[in-house]
Amino acid sequence: MKKIRVLLAEDHETVRQGLKLLIDAQTDMQVVGEARDGREAVNAVATVAADVAVLDISMPEMNGLAATRVIAESAPQTAVVALTRYGDEAYVQQMLGAGARGYVLKQSASGELLAAIRAAASGKQYLDTALAGRAGSPLFRPRGQAGLPRITDREAEVLRMMAAGHSNKEIAITLDVSVKTVEVHKSNAMRKLGLHSRIDVVRYALLQGWLRDP
Image 1 (cartoon, rainbow, N blue to C red):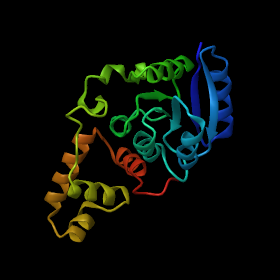
Image 2 (cartoon, rainbow, N blue to C red):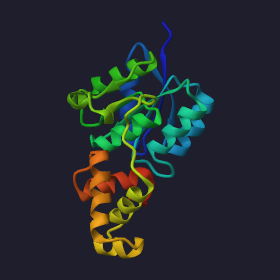
Image 3 (spheres, helix red, strand yellow):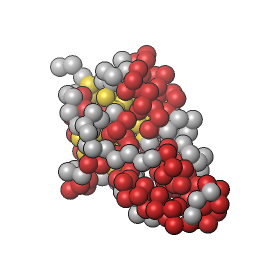
Image 4 (cartoon, helix red, strand yellow):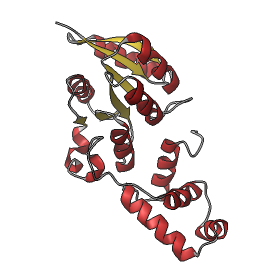
């Protein structure tokens, strides 16, 4: 039986080694490459001929979102499965929109990741069962389907400044608009992206590369 070739990208070595032991213990899959950050993952995909790349989202050098975009463009034969502790709608929407076929939470049972790898290898999409209740939301549609929310450039600018710690008044002065206009842009962007708090906005900004990862 042909085994599923898996590339692991995770910056914490202990976690990565644990995942390798889990995957290599399966009769139908094997780890063929490892990476400590997104840039290494992108480079490795070109050499190890992986069927599935399991990517942590929060990684140095290049985060999982950026790496997924590059892999989807340069190596479409390699399916991406996101592995993260974040279940935020904005994270899921962005990763699926970038081309990921699977999205699994680190806090879930190990069977979730294995199921996602098998599904992705066969060309199917897989969402962690903890997220399944929201699967009908337009935020959870895979790449290529219409309806993914898009924010305007001005809405993105407001979110970026908000994430950087600027108040509505400071944003209004910088953009030369009213505070009310800032509030409208912020409200519309957060509604479209499924963000509910400033913490959600900061996480989204980190994912987009607007802020430096801690």
